[in-house]
Length: 145
Image (cartoon, rainbow, N blue to C red; front, side, top):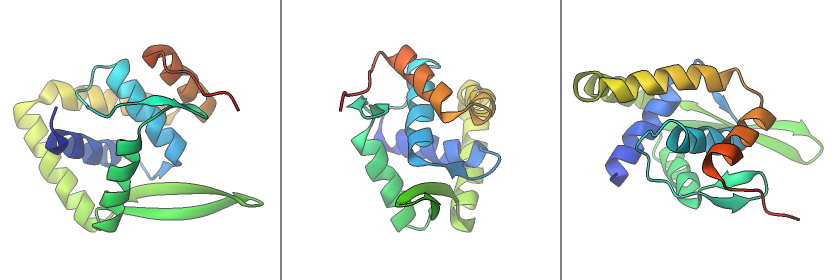
């Protein structure tokens, strides 16, 4: 798949969540599950990392979406020197999502349906459960520290 398709599917990913996506780890694992378990045509490559699968390019694309004003990043303090990065679409991102969603409805409704269904399921799961599922379906382990 092309970079353009990855961007469109990633924007759709954020738009289909009921609220902000809480944490970078959640994003990485949910995208990994969508790719490996549900065959969503995303070309991000994952490698072993501290909490299992991790894609450098996915992280970079998210940073670009923040820098271009499509995604909003909120830094939430969750403990002493521990922070979580939450993401949601900005107004501009929401308009872009609606355009992408309309195009998917017309040209690729099965992918849109798969994303909608799976994201609802993933939203209800805990981070440890999603991490385990990502490890299982991708075969990518955590690195040992």
